[in-house]
Image (cartoon, rainbow, N blue to C red; front, top):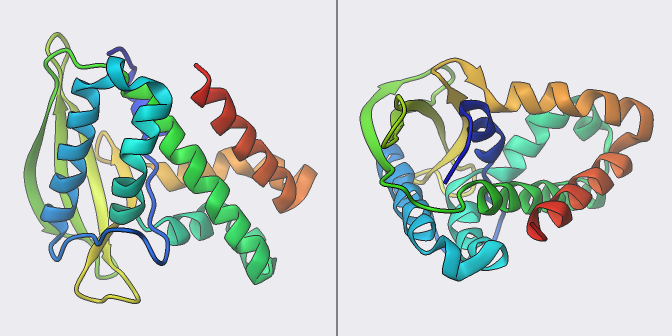
Length: 205
């Protein structure tokens, strides 16, 4: 598998929607480690699965362990506030699809990589920060910090609300910056179309 440190940021988009097929875990560490275990399993079977197979394998884990609705809201800022319920659900679906497709495309093989959990520390606004790293066989480890929040509908369960690359580069801040021009020029419908097109592009590679 080959990727840059910043392609990992693009890959790290994760999601949780109401009615996910499986539940996340009751501790921040357990939720992250469950996702890492699933991701590592897919990496080891990547060639046999193909991109679409990796997508199908990762989808239930991603939708379980990540709070996609929250992440969609933060990434689109005022556009979310101005949108109706139906448009919000369409956005969440497109954002989720693009996010899973990004994981399936980027994590396309296994060359001895492993995931390590380093620490769990309190974060701002009632979050917990799960500090981890991807250990690479021939490169320096890549630090990833998962920002974990309790879910609103199940307050004992924890899901990913953001990911920090190298300890301080917010995935959601990056997404918000990327989406700003599209939202200004084409509105929420234009962003949804862009996300769906990106997912299609990733899934045919």
